Length: 412
Image (cartoon, rainbow, N blue to C red; front, side):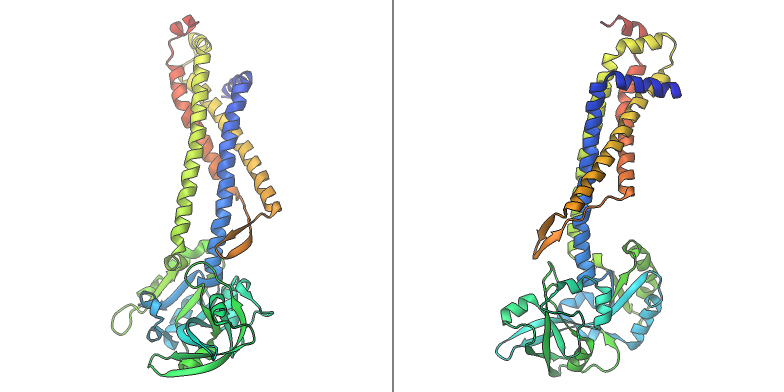
């Protein structure tokens, strides 16, 4: 076997120009795949982060039927104290859960004493909400603090511009509770919540105690519980652990709860799936280039070395050894190209990371491009390229092994 590697290595060196060209094509294909993947993952990571860390969280738990009617923000489908206690049995001391936050979601009339408009509100416990949604604080402007105190409101940017209100202004919230009773409270604007793309980017925030006051809620009652994981890769595992919660029945023998991951709740998940599909398509195209380049080179190698193959065949070299010889050459080309491509890709990604290139997405600007390559990405692409190199070498290797020694030696 060592002799086969030595002979294959010498054959590649002997045709250095062809070897260099093929290796360059493989290297280029690997570089394009890895660099594109790192850029796509950076953009995908930003989108997922904005959705999960500033709005939805990783998992949301509701009373059964709430999500189906969420556009109406139904208060009659809130979770009561006993239901909340049941849910906490699954998440409070769960090793996968980093934090969770209670929310009361409702619609209200927003008035600046001159005009009025509708507003969607998330009533939260500020400490829990900012811990569960760490990027929410980055969406706040015109405020020198993160805390949301009782008697204060964070107003969505679009509404603040339309109603011409600013930090420090006093406004009135008027809301109907689930029984139809109307109540109003005065609140002070403590800051503005900037928009993000998609649903939820126009919601305001108030303290959960103020929501209970305006809605006349007594006791513990929430619309949803938002859960944040320590590691997002554990999302399927936690979803499985919460499955018994979904199977619990109420007194009418109907499911009591529903558990949704952010992928079920956000329409942007379809965009992310499209990005993954585009990523896979580009990988297939670039790897196909590697396949074609190696196939062409190995076929050329067979035709150029017909006499050489005929000679070693006439000397008694079995066909399988000839096959191994050409497969080894393809393997070496694949390994060399994969190593060079990986090194070049790491250098390019590091340069892009140091350069801190900025871009804009929707209403967000000056976003920093943060490409990164994991060892697993490099290993996977390298293995694929090496396997493709071997596959591309099979046909030329078989062709070489089937050459008739007599006919091969006659070839001019």
